[in-house]
View (cartoon, rainbow, N blue to C red):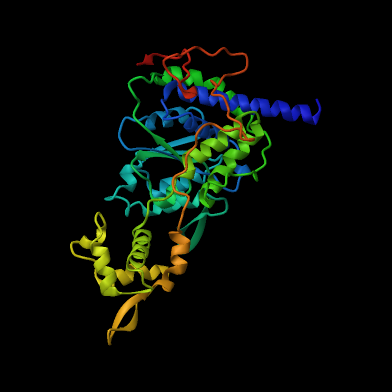
Length: 413
């Protein structure tokens, strides 16, 4: 067989493996759109190729409410990924010790809200640091061990594939290294098969065989990434887009559309500091001036509706608190003679650099898509995923491709 034919065969096998994963996932899970199972399928293949890439994005499966399918996603992935390691509220020692084992384990962390909630986040700060370190190769966790009277430093290689599921939002530093899968509660008209582990395990066997057969398919790590993604999102998606490009067909276009839909708008919550910078700029614009005294600036901020400055920890924001919030952006108050007296205040020019970096004028705003685009810009027709030679059952009541059902288990209505 020629190299060209062999490459085509490998691409076809990889495409079939991805399709098998999508079919398996959508049998049991009602996703908000067709993009989530595409991203998860690419990530699932990535778990078997993780050493090929510099980074391994965290799969962040979150929802606003309970019973939205997060745990179901983990149930499915546990049957597909190699060497799964499923945990709830683990200790640091457990995580870095298990992740350092070989062959590499794939961590499935459920109920992350119990770890990163407001009452527990500080206690699990070390675990968050481990998750962040494991995103990139060559960032070990260092721990000291005592050998008799001698102290030695151990390096734990925690790089590898991880999926985290929880209600609400994950810490910003974790979200920034993640592929976001935002689940929603299943609507009344959406139908999926009931997940019964005994039947799902049997259904997963051929899917795992597909995945194992393509684990050695060569991929090119450096591929084009949509401009709509910020640097962190581009790093996270590059391994998945590499796999999509190796699969060929419609996968490159569908993967990039999924990246744009799921991550292009995935900006971190506006921090207190960024909000303050934006509203300080509003104050300068409102007063049409290049200098504001601290008194005048605070008066403007205190009067803003639905802003925190009028009730900052139980009282209006003070000059000292304002200066402390602006200090990380290299903005400090200076004395200026105003009306015959020296008064502290701020110059517009002092904010130029911070505004350019954090609150640029005319930002891109929310991104959206008006349809599925191919790589050349032409619309792609919605299709049902299928395996070679497999007929696709007609499911007229379920419009999207991710709702394809297969004859496994019972169907919930």
